[in-house]
Length: 248
Image (cartoon, rainbow, N blue to C red; front, side, top):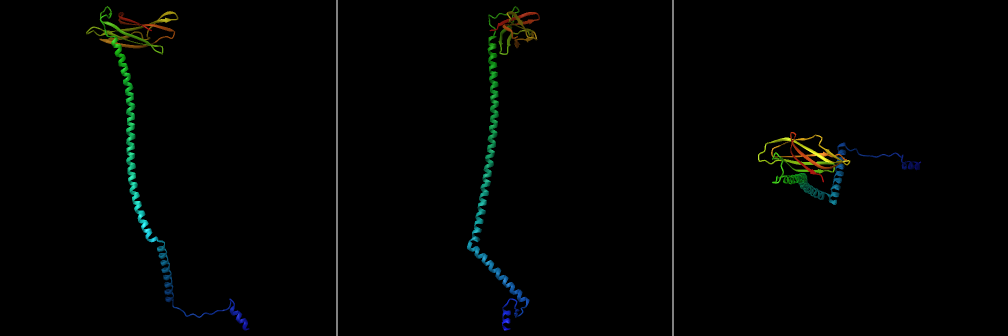
């Protein structure tokens, strides 16, 4: 019997009884608050102690200040670089504008130079042409005494056309204005027979007081071998001057 009671007491299901003296609830809350505050104080101390050991407190502030200083220095450098970049871009844009302007001006000068060369050549040709047409003492004039044809020229072009030019002058000091017609006649050989031709528009009007220069083009038929060009100045039906030039 005693053994059973002893075994029963030693088992988990054995009944237990504890005698405790009851505590009032204010003391219980006070005790709980003290324990919580103590734990919080220990945790705060452990955090501060660990941060001091790691050297994060003072180092972080110094690094932060250095980082802020570096950021300010970098911002200043960025502003300076941006200003330099804008200045260089402005200079580059100005240089591009100047180069473009100079290029356009150079192209215009080249065009003007070519035009001047053409004008110069034309003036040289005109000067040579007029020098050949200066009246001389032995110049043969028509019976009227003043009207004459000078420097009749004819040139066969590669296109088969004949380019001709002639100068009609009045050698008098103060001549009366002349109004007449200029007739151009082309002569050659076609299929072994004599051939003559004239511009399709016929004789062209001439109006001059001191001199008049006339030019023209004439398309020679393919089967014709051109031999000469004759120019006549007509006053109505009267021939006032005539000149013939041979085609070489």
